[in-house]
Structure formats: structure tokens, C-alpha cells
Image (cartoon, rainbow, N blue to C red; front, side):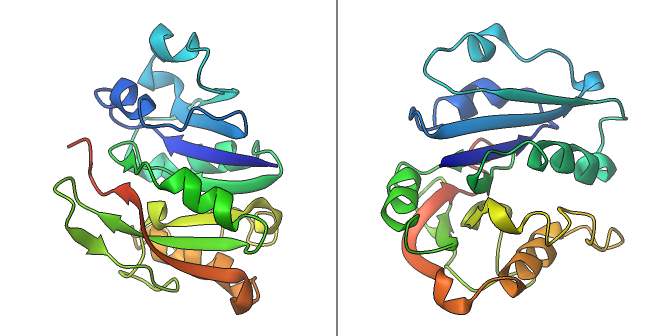
Length: 193
């Protein structure tokens, strides 16, 4: 069973720093989703023996926010069985995230933690998915529902905040008893900005 961490790239300046916070564990896959236009992933990342960077997803489209769905779908189609976690390219994984995952992966199918700012102050508490009350990085979820929710294809693209839409759809496919609200931080919101 793997924890697939998916990062959709827009900005170049944060990637090497973000890598420092990816858990150095054998059961972690870091999947980077990018366009060809984005450029090459630095060798310090691709040659790093401590990170399981198994897939670099390259699609041929303009590198803009509108193509987020194309990029993330490409990455989500390639996850290994287990769980997935979406890490925005300007966020940092909290050191407790892997422990939260490891302690709960056999009991739950969706694990929702809190997010904090760089200064440690609470930004979002753990909530069941709802628009404006959840962020991409609050949730670790089973991969078994990805085909059921049709990846990001059912998202209303006219409303840019995809987080609440996507996680609400995933939540609707699960038994509520299999969803854990954990009062520990999963990540630092805009931790690299």
C-alpha cells in the first residue's frame, strides 16, 4: 500500500524546498504533474535516492491555472493502490502528516487534518468536506474511489475553488464512519510563500 503525494506544478521557485519536507519513506510516491512548458525537474530531485519520485507526468498544454484539471488527472491516473494526498506547489507537509497517515490507514478511508500557517497559527480546522471549509492538503484519501468520482472531471470549472467540490464528491462515496477528523496539522498553508 502506497501513499501517493501528488503535486501539480505552476511555480518553479519552491520545488527543491518542498522536496525537503516529503517524508523519506519506502511507501511514499511523489508524483509531480507538470506541463512540458514548465521545463525540467532539477537533477537534485530526480537523482535523489531518498525520495521515491516514480513518475513525472508531462502533458502538452499551456502552463496556466486553467489546465490544473488536465495535469492532476494525468497524475491521479497513475497512482498506486493505497491512498493519495494532494500537495499544492506552495505548501509544506507538516512533520506529523506521515504519522497521522500511518496511524489511521488501516482504520479509515479518508483522513482529514487541520492546516496551519508558517507561524503555527490555525488556518483551517478539520471539517467534513464543504466549500471554503477544506483545502486540498487537508485530506488523505483512499485511491479506490478515484474512478467512482471520475477524477476531477465532474468539477464545475466555472468556479475555481476545486478543493471543496472534489473532496465533497469523494466524501459522498464513503461511509461516514470511515472518515476521520484528526486534530493535528497536515500541512503549512502557503508554507513556501
